[in-house]
Image (tube, rainbow, N blue to C red; front, side):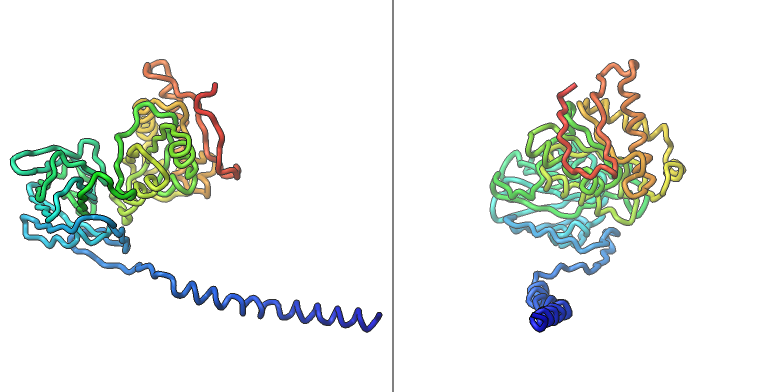
Length: 361
């Protein structure tokens, strides 16, 4: 019996000692499979005409028509069909972009790379105005099928005078021969004016990281009217591609209504007071109040006003001013409506899914 127990203990010690080597051995096939996955190109390709190419960001426009694109200014048009959000070309007012296809075009998808005013589309003798809702990614069901069309570049308007944003910029042009476009084509509706849920996000990516369950559950699954509004803009930062990323993320999550874009500069701080050094508190509260009045939500959702999730001062600042804005909008001087209630995201709450009913008292 003693020999048997000694043998069992000896075998157990061998197994424990050998466990790391066994795990390493079994990980070898997994490492091999990982090594042969399709690589992601993250190289940087500076584009002198764009000033925005900080990331390699291919989109892979499947099922799109092959196009011939020419620019009246003589600029290289290859950037307009290189399948990248991260490249764009600056265009002067009045520049004409001619798009032609051997197959008649039924729909047009334009990816701008700046704040978008109204612009003109010409088909033959007819002119049409688009850009009414300032969509950065705009899909157009063409009023008539055609083999050729012309986009006339408008005046850039009041663009942020930083990093060359005083000119219009375009990233991509895509066309289709059928109304049945791929799911990656973003067919936005204008911002909702009678929302069930209005969600405020400080920056692009906060809507996914901290408020990510709202769109797929309440918009896509429960078919409620969910409207997102952003507090800051990224056009005047070194990461303008985040303006594209916010749209891609919301669309993929099931969003339907085009988000209301922010106007304040993105700046990191660790406290409310730090954020207030670059953004006026009254202007912030007024900005959010006007959005609430415009959207008429039953529920207002904001971020963590206590700790800013991980300690971001702008998160605290934005969320605190959401509370002020709800109070402003409910004041008797505002005769449009009264917001039903707030739902705040606070870091200590671990649940991602919040089963609140926007229609309950």
